[in-house]
Image (tube, rainbow, N blue to C red):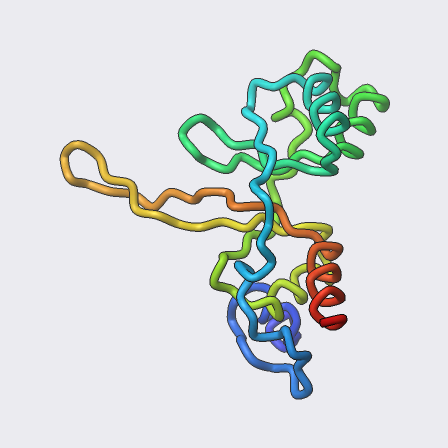
Length: 165
């Protein structure tokens, strides 16, 4: 059962501290990674334009976010190219035709240990921060803002740079 799997429990936020011999970075916060602002695509961007943008800017993946701030999914360069070449999407189709709607999210205050567990199974995680957004009538809702996309290379780079120091 996945409920008996510590890594699954950490990845999904049910357990915090299960590793006996934690590395020095295990309890550090995700915000310590100093991620750069992500490239974000709007849903109306075409597959062709998304491919061009990702290649030109040197990104492998990007969040697709509606004008309202709702995170619709993630697009990867390889999946977009594969979908177009296989005929499952056209270059002119909106990028929403090829997005991944299943992806991991992590907060700035979460630990690098939790991130490490997520990245054992996922190629990336979207770093989000929730904030309260108020309407004119005083009602509010929680809005997620994308702060970055983190990969295993980001974590490895952080650890190796600080190990050298």
